Length: 217
Image 1 (tube, rainbow, N blue to C red):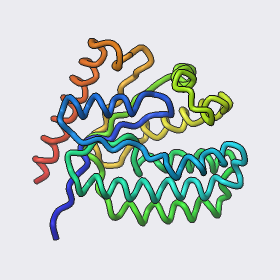
Image 2 (cartoon, rainbow, N blue to C red):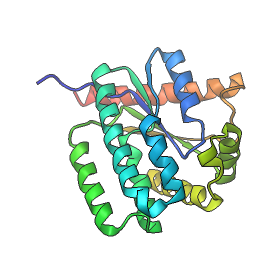
Image 3 (cartoon, one colour):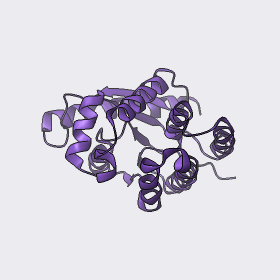
Image 4 (cartoon, rainbow, N blue to C red):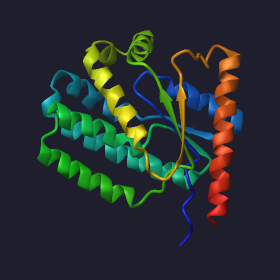
């Protein structure tokens, strides 16, 4: 059987941190193919979730999971791919919703069973870039972006999500090289010096990941 290609880079971080912008910059700099987070079907469920969270958390999250799985498999097949979020961070949201009571223990168990099954059919990316940001800075960026469903969400939601993100990457053990970059004071979209700093950091970590993979055979 032909060996599956690995996704080159996944960019992850809390909502509003600047993942999509960085994916575009990486692809332009390194001649890679972007796979941005999908929002066509998810937006309808996401809108419903924010107004009735206990009712819509399970169908929304399982829909996100299955679509992320399909997108990740497609990216693996294409190769030379950079992704904005992926199936590997999907559980962060589910764990948060379980803590809040939006998911029941039974729903979380079903979700987790599905996730573990799907993960058997993918391989981790070479490099995972986690953009670390303070909650207030993330909210400021969310407000500048101006998506109606996001700007109306209470601060506690974003603060808790950010806490779950930080915990996830403190305990990270998913098989990819991990690069954590604090981005509170960086504007890599508009400032060339910040953009070069990001690209230099990613290039070094990516080369390290490729060397490690080559050493493993």
